[in-house]
Length: 81
Image (tube, rainbow, N blue to C red; front, side, top):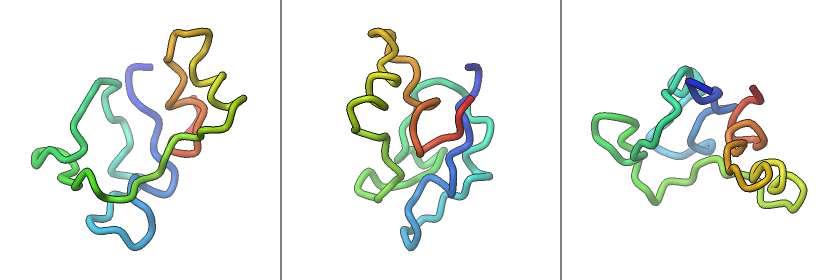
């Protein structure tokens, strides 16, 4: 994927400041970035964000035969590609 899928319902949980909406997460480059970067989301690393699933079968799909390339595709934190 060239870009990451949009995060459903936004990056931050309801009631968390700063509010990071789903629209703000659209078309992010598929590359590492710091969530607390003042030039980016400027979200403290202590902020509650949407999390990846930690259930066995979903985790196996995310790991994808040790390629570790399906975390964005198989979680509630982002849309499926």
